[in-house]
Image (cartoon, rainbow, N blue to C red; front, side):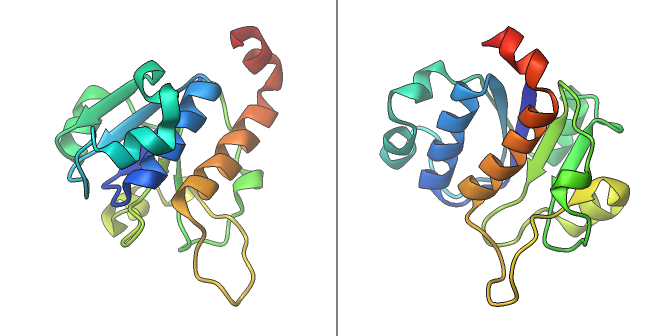
Length: 156
């Protein structure tokens, strides 16, 4: 139904939790290297529980490899703290790609600039600087599902 893209994830527990989220929402998980752990690491499987084997997971050598294999134009959204446009103002469509950057660096600046009109953020209070990656992915993905709920029901 949707595609979640993790650009250089660093924490295996987050990726495992996102994998579990993807299985339960019929979402494809795209992982772009380099990553900060072995994709088969025990922590990833533990966070993903028994869902990891059911996951539609695609791994790419780098960002160029990803773009060579996927047609990205106006069907993508880039989650970042570097914009004022809230995620709930974005129009999500079935098959869209939702990008999240690494826990330490976010999405690379050149990618954000290339798709500036597709940047989205999760509004937060002034005391914090960002949310956990897995929580962020869940918030945005389920907004996309909400906007496409009739199609979602047909897939489940």
